[in-house]
Length: 252
Image 1 (cartoon, rainbow, N blue to C red):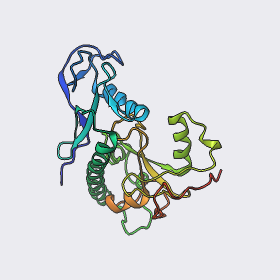
Image 2: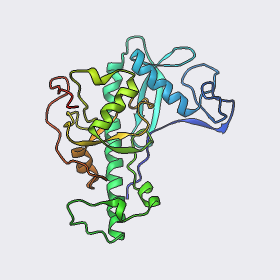
Image 3: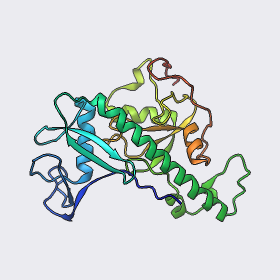
């Protein structure tokens, strides 16, 4: 079985000074700038995500130096380097997005392979059109089978409506009064049907790899994982339209 690592940020393994954000004594980030402040990987990652979302670029919380962000798809290591004055987010963001897609697809394939073996071991009838994994496996096995997000967190299966209201909470905007909105899949870049369910990162927008949102449609999950979704999931395919063109009214 292919070994796939989720993405991570490099740290100094030795516990040093308390983090300047959470004040916990954890392994400190190897900073890409000359700042002497200590940041744990979790806080640094969230700070970079917040910076990208608010300012359009990743900046150090202390000196405000701007960074380019890249990814080593083999090791899953997130790489930071000094950004030149003429380099804009639009130049590194598409490259980063392409690499994260490749890693996420590999993670889904690995998840599907593990799930298939576990289901077979539990003597589940795989010919059934809807496999209720929760009815055949214990809680520990379910946790082991939880699909992993590219950021190192886990993917959660939710209804479209639940995801819609979670976006409201994440962005602090009253989405209920918006006349139009879309949720698109980060793997195929198409609009997720309103009546379907989808997969989203449990960690929300706390990773520089997905500073605004991270969602995977049922079609892509089934295509790459080759496994049925947990719960009542709808298997409606995404519409083949890009999100800037087609918008839908809120059905609630």
